[in-house]
Length: 355
Image 1: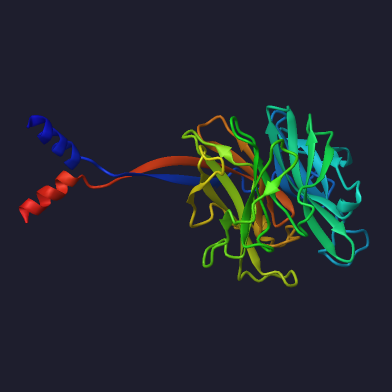
Image 2: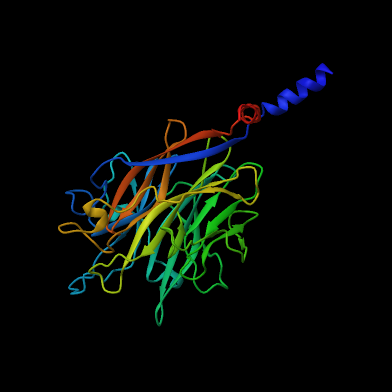
């Protein structure tokens, strides 16, 4: 009888506990870390959309110029990728380690994202191969490197898909490589791909992370950098987004790009989404992010991140982002966890007895 009563008491004392993830973002500085408007920083006019390369603690930066004698302030030369140490981020002609060399990227090598696989000892670079034929075609391509400087092209990842962009690869123990990729101007969200070897990829036709009407990511979502392991075994996935309704002086452009996040299930082969933010963690606010004179403004109202660095503090990271598609900024992202405890059933019982 006592055992039965104890079981009842334990039942009455049970609580419901829900875990909540908190993600905070603070700029590391009110100034860009790379900008052609900073003396000695870069010889290229526009520097943005930056990947981080671990082990060598360096940045891989998309760089471009305005064509010589052009009267169009938005005209661009093909994109190159420049490597620079984070300790002294200076970009010269000698910094360029990746630029168009084959026909499918004749108009630029854009938007780098880099992941490292311990199994092979290689860096895996996904980038947008821009090709100019009758118009401009963008397709997601891959290259590998043992050192971050010398790259071997592996070709277009999805040759049968006419337009593809933004691939964030995750290598993790005991699982096959996976990639979150896509450009929701073509499909209504990001997609999910798997690979046996990190080079050959098969994509799902279903939507992994959709755009959401009436949210900050209502117009577009693109992958950010590779998902990062958290102390609870799940992954933080930083992604890029856009919404309309922000007129600018750039013809036909009325968008604002922001950064969002999702928490992915670390024990799931398909990285099921556990949580997703309802508000961005960082939006254009500083003059060089919004694109206000005298700052550069290739594309106004843009914060777009491709690079992330793990810091020594628990669940803390630095993201590197393009501001107004013109300069590179940095911000610290911190993740914490809190628990929401429900009211014990025994308290509810007492309340009923009092009434």
